[in-house]
Structures are given as C-alpha cells and as structure tokens.
Amino acid sequence: MTTFKAEVFQNQYLPQGAREVHAIVTVSSEGAAITTAAATGGKLFGILCDVSGSMEGEKIHAAKDAIVQLIDMIPADVSFFVVAGSTVADLIFDAAPATPASKQRAVQAVRKVTASGGTAISTWVVRAIEQFQTMPHAIRQALLLTDGQNDKNDATSLASALKKSQGVFQCDCRGVGTDWDVRQLKEIGNALLGTTDIIANPAGIAADFQNVLASAVGKSVSDVVVRLWTPVGAKVQFCKEVSPSITDLSSMAAQVNPRTLEYPTGAWSGSESRDYHFAIEVNPGNVGDEMLAGRASLVTKQSGVETKIAEARILAVWTDDEAKSTRIERHVAHYTGQADLAESIQAGLEARASGKEDVATALLGKAVRIAHDSGNEATAKLLRTVVDVDDPATGTVRLKRTVAKEDEMALETRSTKTKRIQKA
Image (cartoon, rainbow, N blue to C red; front, side, top):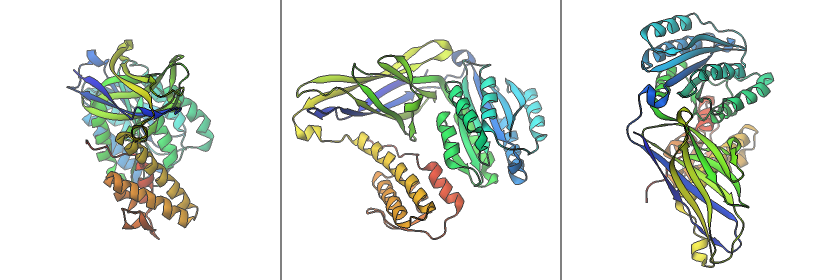
C-alpha cells in the first residue's frame, strides 16, 4: 500500500509588522504500488500523435514505428486509445483493454495513418477528454507528440479545452524536430500537469515514448490534490510545484470554501517526492504573537471517495530578534534560486533573439552562476551549449556566435527542471 507524508521547511520567525510567510512543503509517497484494477479503478493511457502535413516523411514514419512499439509494451491491465491529430482529431482506436487482439487492431490502424492537414490541438484534447471520461475513476495519463505550431485560430478553443481537461487527465508533451513553439507546448504540458521535452531527432522518438509509458503505468494513486487552509484575512500569493520542475499551480486553484483552496497534483507512483512553495500574506502581528498561517492537506479522490492522507502546518511567529527574523530557510532559498535560474534563462534567450547581446550575456551569466552554486549540473551543461563559460562561480560568460537551434530549444524547454536540495 502507498503511504504519504508531508514536511514543512520554513523560517517561521517574522519581524514585527511583517505579513509575508514562505514555506516549502515536501510531499513523499512510499510503499508498493497499487496494481489491481479494483484498487485504482483501472488505468487508461492515451496516445495523441500529430499527423498534420508537416509530419510527412521521416517524422511520421518514426512516430508510427514508435507508437507500434509502445502499443506492444502496454501491460495487459492497462486500457489505451489512439488519436491521430491534425485540423481534426481522428480516433483511430477507441479505449479498450490491451489484449493481444486489441493491440493488433490498433497497430493496423496506426499503420494506415498518413500525414496531411493543419494543426488544431484543441480537437485532440477534446477527443481525449471524451475517451478519458469513459473511465472516470482510472489513473488517466496521455502522451502528445507534435512537430509544429498550433494554428493561431485555434488559440481560444485550445484554452477552453485545456480548462475542461483539468482533473480529467494528465499529459506529457513532446516536440519532435525544431519547428514547434516551446512556450506553446509548455503551456499545454503545464496545464495538463505533465512534462514537456524536445526530441531533436526522429530516431529518438521510440526510446522517449517508452520512458513516458513506464512512468505512466507506474502511477498507483490517482486524483491527488493539495488543500490549503488559511486564516481569516489571509491571502495566498502563489502555490508552485518547485521540484522536480517548476509549475505555477496558482491559476488552477479551486475554491473549496471561503478559507480553503484546492490545487491539483495529478497521479502519484508508489515512491516519489515533490516540493511545493507556498507564499501566504497574513494580517501583521506584534512581537510574541503566534499564528497558524496555513494548513496544507493532501487529499485523494479515488473512486469518488475523499481521503486525507497527509497534513503539514505553516506557522508565523513575530519576534524582535533580528537574528531569527532575517534568516532565510535553506529550502526556501534554494527553490527561490531555482525559480530565478529559470527566469534568467528565459529572459536571456529572449534578449539574445532580439539582438540585445549585453543583456543576454548578463542574464545567461547569472544563470550559469546560480546553476553552479546550486549544483544543478544538468542545466549548467545545457547552458554551455549557448555560452562559453570563463568562470562559473562569478557567472563570467561569452555568447557563442553559432548555436544549434535544437540546443537553444532544449535549454528553453528544460529550464524549469530543478535540482533537488541536498539533505543537510
């Protein structure tokens, strides 16, 4: 059975009159994964593949081969469906258990797919919602692959579809090649509580798909939310997942009651850990006052039944001891730095694209320094594809004259992946 625990890391001491409380809440799941359909309501995995005209050639052939391999690997206790997406969404295989016979039918349907038309991802999302609603109590995961940019005329419909999808399914997004829009695809991935990444070469599609499937079928607890209670007069400034990557959940909050907000976290595996950063504005206190500034509860909604599985308390204590009130808790400092790292990369790449080389050098240099200081070697390695690093400790860098587009896109796509804070 999977169990959960929640820990709070914060400096609860505030100077007199201060209002802002910051805390990192670490949530961990432990134990064996729940594998029976009775325990989880089953599992449903959706494959949404771009088959627009721009996929013609090597990309559509590699995608079809990868999907065939993926279908073959789906466990027997998992149901699946396949959508071929262009301007419209063609449901080429309805949701069904992964029996040998259904796999064979799905493979035959995939083999017949051809590339044509434009790209309207809203239609893919709507079709996926319809399929996932046939198994409302299942663990519902999807994979979306595209090689191009969504039609501008589809923007409003896509925003509406993504809003309707919240709480219905999660989706990992992949962009193949270099003609797709990083921000656009990340917006989709973030809204669907999934990862977003680049597959620069079509030859890498199969391996990436297999990793996504392994992660999806490893989920054991569905529909987990964080409920944040705050006292009268308090205001939640933001709620962000900050590890393993940065996702601002603030806009996804649902009002449970006048003092409680609910944030989706999606499905969890039997063993993982995530960190959440809460910022709460409270009524200011006097020296000696103590307050429960927030209570974060983890709640499951499996098969329509709500169960509280973990809880953490966020405190505020006002003091005139400057040594206490000015100390920045190491977890808060670390993840604030990781957010600053992501923002510096994004702004630096924008400045570089607009020809503001001095600004780009300063911002990307700052990113190099933060990555160095925090031990985020994965991001540091990506940064070295766009800048020559003279001194990582000071952030002294020089912009590279020539940068491969796939390297720049990989840095932008993966800039929000964070380095987990090391234990003290």
